[in-house]
Length: 243
Ligand SMILES: NC(=O)c1ccc[n+]([C@@H]2O[C@H](COP(=O)([O-])OP(=O)(O)OC[C@H]3O[C@@H](n4cnc5c(N)ncnc54)[C@H](OP(=O)(O)O)[C@@H]3O)[C@@H](O)[C@H]2O)c1
Picture 1 (spheres, helix red, strand yellow):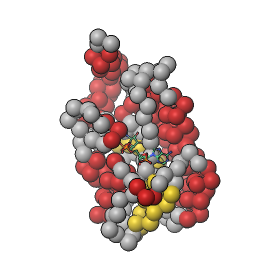
Picture 2: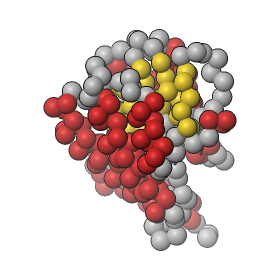
Picture 3: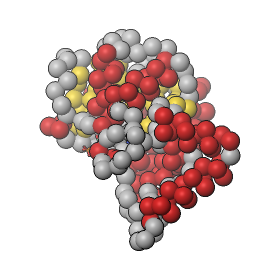
Picture 4: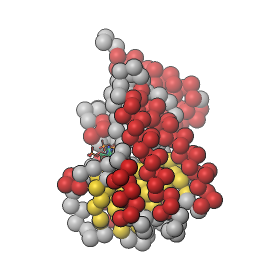
C-alpha cells in the first residue's frame, strides 16, 4: 500500500496530529485531502490546492451526512478528532469523552462505509491511544473511551474485511500537542508521529504504536498487562501525592 494518488479525509485537521497528518499526506503525493474541522476558519493555510476544507463536527449527524455527500471519492478515512477530560472516573466528563471519542467516531465509520466500499483500496485509520491497553485514572473517562474505540476498531476490522476495507488502530503514547499542554515528558512531535503513522499503514501494520513513549508502555503490556497497570498506578500516585 502507498498513499500516492489517494484521496484521504482527516477529521480534526486544524491542529495537532490532524494538521501534521495533512502535511505529511501532501508530502506523500496524495491526490486530495479533505481537511475537516469544526470551524474551517481555524484550519491553517496549507498552501496546496489538493486540500479541500469541510466543516465537520463529528458529533453532528447532519454534518456527517453532508461530509459523506461532499467527499464521495474518499478512499481513506482518518478518524483523528478527539477530546480529553481530566480527572478520575467519578469527576471527569465521562459522557463527553465517550460521546466524541467513541460514539461519534463509530458514527463516522458507519456513515463512510457506503462511500468507502465504492472506492478502490479503501481503509479506515482510527486514532485511539495507548490508554486502550490500560486505564490512566487521572484521565479515566478518556482511557475508557479509547479502550472502547480500540475494541470497536477490532470489530470493524473483522466486519469490513469482506467489503475490502482495511482498518487500522493507532495507539500513541504521548505526543507534543495541545492535549498535553504543560507536560514535561519527552514527547514525540506531531510531524514525526504523522510520518510514523503513514509509514506503518504503508507496511499494512494493523495496530500501530507510533511513538517512543507508547512503545515503551506497549512493551510493558506485552510482558504482562499487570506490569503496565502497576506503571499506571505509580503515575497516578505520584500525580496525586499530597493532594
Ligand atoms: N497528544 C497525545 O499525546 C495523544 C495520545 C494518544 C492519542 N491521541 C489522540 O490523537 C488525536 C488527536 O489529538 P491531538 O493530540 O492532536 O489533540 P488536539 O491538539 O487537542 O486536537 C484535537 C483535534 O480534535 C478536534 N475535535 C475535538 N472535538 C471535535 C468534534 N466534536 N468534531 C470534530 N473535531 C473535533 C479538535 O478541533 P477543535 O480545534 O475545533 O477543538 C482538534 O482539531 C485524538 O483522538 C487524541 O485522543 C493523542
